[in-house]
Image 1 (cartoon, rainbow over the protein chains, first blue to last red):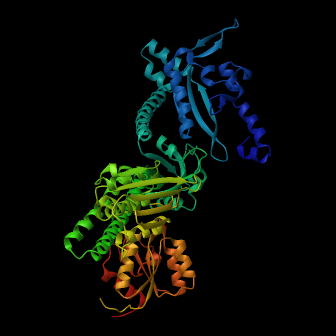
Image 2 (spheres, chains in turn blue, cyan):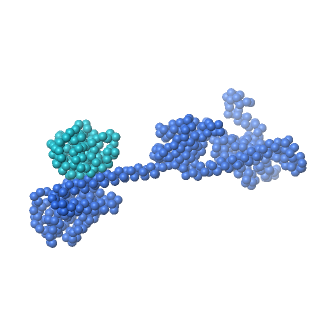
Image 3 (tube, helix red, strand yellow):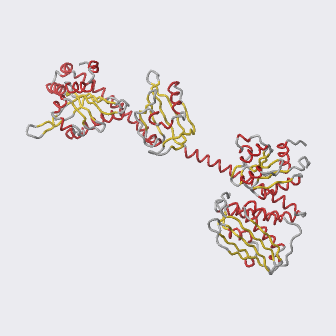
Length: 505
Length: 124
């Protein structure tokens, strides 16, 4: 029955199965795992096996070539090629021994020559479901040739008669194919081992023909081979890449992407990740110059793009900090100038303020600008004075950069004032600095600076830069309070500030 | 220094007290009255929404880790002219605010006056 009539009969499946079974040509079907899914009567006859003995069995176990590893590998190689490429493969001459019943319940291997064709059977979605083997036993032809050779003389004539010339040609073609196959294998090896990602897309729908491990990794090891890119990587919809591929396919113009941002499912079943790729879409042409597909090649540059972005951010931030520091220095210079008429005392005062700022910067640099310890800052800003006359007492307190810079300036102003007019200006005076942290949930730092046993203190007639700086700094920069008391027995400064302000930078 | 801006009240938004003190000094030298200074975006928004009258504002772009642009938008809506001050340069401003008078830190007294005059539309 012709196929068209079969189709009309309305029971295509059953009729086809019947036709398959009745065919004089031996056929068998393998699953992608190379297990028997079915075979026809002719196949069972030629192998002298039963359906029950074969269904579900691994083909290379059912027929192991009797220890002839070379030919077993050729047969397996042909199946694997069909699985990998989805294309039909031929083995024009295969020398393959099969076990035949010996009549006493056992079996023995019998030499056989076969000519096989292995065809992929795809489902509607294009996925390979089965391999169909059509095999012909050509043992007799081969035996005839050998007998002719052994009998001598008549070889070429007999060869011509039984098709030996055809066989020889087939063998040559097979040899060529083998050589090409080796070359193709070498090329594929190169793709597979390439550090960058490689994919070959076929046809106007961009169906994945092959991808290398780097590409598989890029797409989170999803199975893509045999699927169109729109089906395989649906998350690319709306990102412009499908349109670019359509364009390359239509125009034949290659496309090069530089640091191109892609939202991709990068890990198996993972969320969308942003990756940056350098890549090229190169059209593939056949012998007539028609475009048949697109070669995709590239590498991921996410790390270097992110590093460059981080670097730009850091440079911007550095610039911001430097400019702000310069504005601070400018302010110190201007305010200092206003309280000094003598250029020499101005220079001295300005420099010591600059050094105070610089000391705190040094401390912060050591911690990569994460912060500094209060006692450490105090020690740094007062190290010019006798440590026995400046008694510091309090727990370790980690200060953020802004608080550290402010308190550095404040301690400097207090110490300078003490050395000029206060407790450190004569031989007897002392300074006690005590601090504590209250309320561990909403932490507040209290610092008390007390000068004792120094010369008598009187309230200054005019508020100097130092006292303005202390009050303003604590209130404005740190959100705290500062109170300066000019008590008769010595200056007192009480400072309280919150330690956990959201923004300290 | 000319007294072209004499008598104006200028809001100062700046998180570093030393820089704020510098601006106050410069403003007072020009005959202006400084308002504030305030050191956070929240405080600045309160002043802008409040009743205190003022003629212009100096806005630090990065105030205690926050961008000052909500304050700029509120001022624009209220029709109060303002000047940005920044260490990033005008290139660091988003598209929306390019072209706004901008002071580069550190700044001279002259630059502060020029920028304010430009913003307030005052000619010498």
